[in-house]
Image 1 (tube, one colour):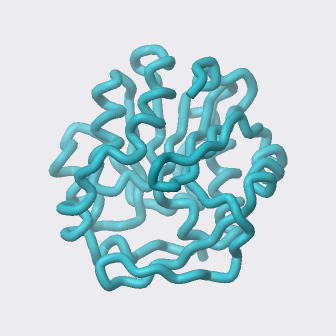
Image 2 (tube, rainbow, N blue to C red):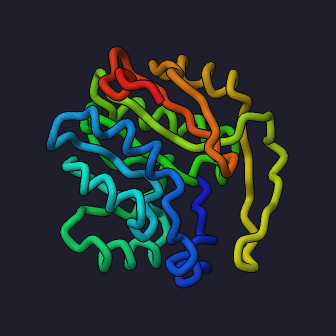
Length: 204
């Protein structure tokens, strides 16, 4: 059975009041604005939809959200009532192959053991169209020993590959690493492409 990050249900109310900054938005916006209007984007770990899903919609792309946390999805449906969202795990994407032009995953991958991160990458590679891209956040050091952090009094588990480790996993699933960088808050962003991806045509 895949690991389900149920901890976000425990902090859904707190998270809604605390996640008011624009972290991650510039990185996502830099990619989606080179996609054609109406492009289909999968928002993995969409949470309550703010701020990233809302920004995607403002960029005139069609978004489908997916999250395993029921309380976060309940808030998503209040915040963005006309946007489809599915309750499912990132490791078992319930979509047909070659469905999406792009995938976004902010704040999910590093909560999963390495074997399940590989499953996520494989699933995203499957649902991406040729030329699609995947932007995700993760660490850049070997860390498969289940480190624990605290958020609003709740324990969260953290794992990671190195940058080269992610590059290898991506290649094994038909993707290639285009870019890795960190923002001012030390969040690591990986941009991967499936073939000649439109999202890679604009530099950071």
